[in-house]
Length: 106
Image (tube, rainbow, N blue to C red; front, side, top):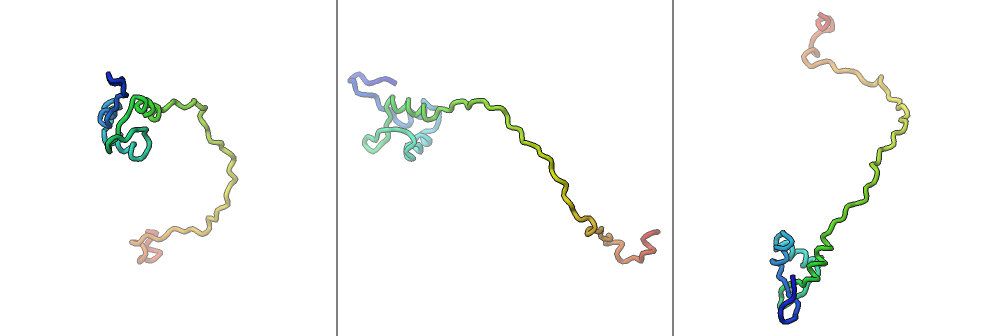
């Protein structure tokens, strides 16, 4: 991306920047609309200089994070919980509800 022969800086369209970034033109225009990318407004359209393109690359750059040791959860002793067990009783199955207690044992 160089200047023009007349010495004026070359201006690039959103489509050209999108092609260089290998993304959609819509995405580049959306970033401009949200004021995330530097740009020039010329004749009602958005244009980009070489410096703008370099700034866009810096904005999109993701650097690797410093590797930190994995955090292991601390396991502490859990005090025993007193739970009442006398309150639970199994229900009699539906098919056996109408039978006499002597019929169930047979």
